[in-house]
Structures are given as structure tokens and as C-alpha cells.
Amino acid sequence: MTTSDLLAERNSTHGDFESNALISQMLKEIFHESDGWSKLTYPQKEALDMIALKVSRILSGNSDFADHWDDIIGYASLGRGVQLVDHYAEVDKGLTELIESTPAVKPVPNWRKLYGGKEPALRNDLAGDTRRQGRGRAKASPRT
Image 1 (tube, rainbow, N blue to C red):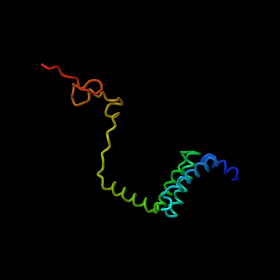
Image 2: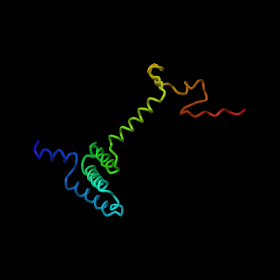
Image 3: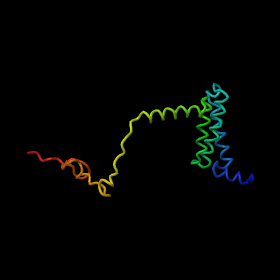
Image 4: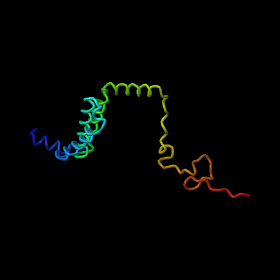
């Protein structure tokens, strides 16, 4: 792949470089001038700078490109000091335990089989409740 091919490919996912640079640098200026910036660790600062770059790519390029979003998650976890592999292993373990401890749920019967392929007429199928009319509201009974 030539440099021109690579730049054309990146332009379709990342957007125009000048637009990207403008958005990224503006976000970074906001970050760097905030009161909390000096309190951050170097890894937190770098994570935010990289997140600014990824946000600029979302705004300049293809916002549906999954790598942009995945990279933000990755850099946020690094800024937090969490390694995703360990974090997701714990989440996966918890979900597995939850699924294994949940009693099996019986599937809902297929209404097409039950009603011969036709949608059931609701007012006739409510266990003999003949008061139900139209959109499910009960018709008032005349008082005697």
C-alpha cells in the first residue's frame, strides 16, 4: 500500500487532517487550561489527550467507525489505571455466574402456531371477558 492509498483510506474513516487537528487542539486547550489539569498524573493527561484525538476523528470522519469508540474506552481505562483485560474478565465471570444461577425460562409459545398463522383477536381471547371492546377498554355496564 502506498502512502497515498493509506492517507485516502484514513481520510474516509478519520476525516480531513486539518479539521481533525483543529478539533483535537481546541479540546486539548480546554483540557490543559482547566484548574484540574495540574492535579492529573501523566498517564491521565496522556489518556485525555488521546481521547481528544479520538473525539476529533469521530466529529471529522466516520462516526460509525467502531475503532474510534473502542479506543476511547481503552484510553479511559488506562487513565483510570485499569487494564481492560482484567476488568472484562471480572465482568465476564460475574455474568457467567449470574446466568448459571438463574433458573431456566420456558420459551413463549409461538402465537402463529397457536392461532393457525393468524394474529389472535384480543377481545375474543381474554378468558371469556366479553366486556372488553375495541382497544382494550372495558365498556361500561348500564346501571339498573
